[in-house]
Image (cartoon, one colour):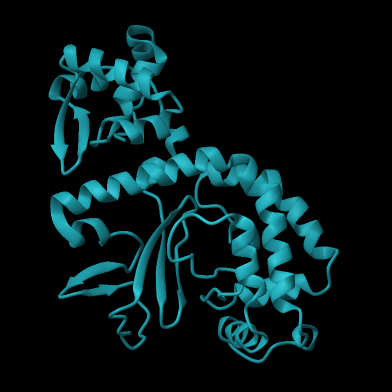
Length: 300
């Protein structure tokens, strides 16, 4: 979606876009069909399922299996979805039978060239968001866990979830699967395989997706050591060790040792939230951060 729109929501995304957008444009320019297909798929505020299919119902399939799912989309379904996203009839260049294969070929290229090299890091961020949402669910129920996933998304109670601000009729999905899928870009969307499976794809929490932007004051790094100082900076809001491992790139043992030192110094505290243990800054920890020269660090 970021490549198709050519726009980034934050500096981390922009660096990635600058690194890959030219090759992406060249790939589309060399193919007279895929370019119009992308423009139709990312049309008027709607994303065609052809390029954003519903995730599998369980487990973590190989990407090749997901591509097979795209290639198996019936031609009638592919054309209907593109007409909805485009907001009208398809141009003549798209009146062909290989739309699903063309979409799958492009997705395969995007994965191999622009996503796979960064996947271990992105996966850590995604896993950390899942842990954070689980903690919110155990603390405040569905309202706390689901409200604010994406602009326009909020828990209405009584088994009702508003997924966006569009004026569409409510959909009854009792008996179907409802999946929540975090992604690292700032854009979210809905996907489905009617009537069996629905998914709400939402952006990871900002601090998770933009961890590299959280500054560590140089003086604090000198005092505590850069790695330990980074852990303290990130604990402006409660986080688990799993999240801290994902955000810092440090090993579990290293993060654990930093937390023990910070706990012993009275700079952080911990509490249990369901099955998770959350760590957070104490008043003393906040005061230490506030005392550092220069701009106040991101609260995490």
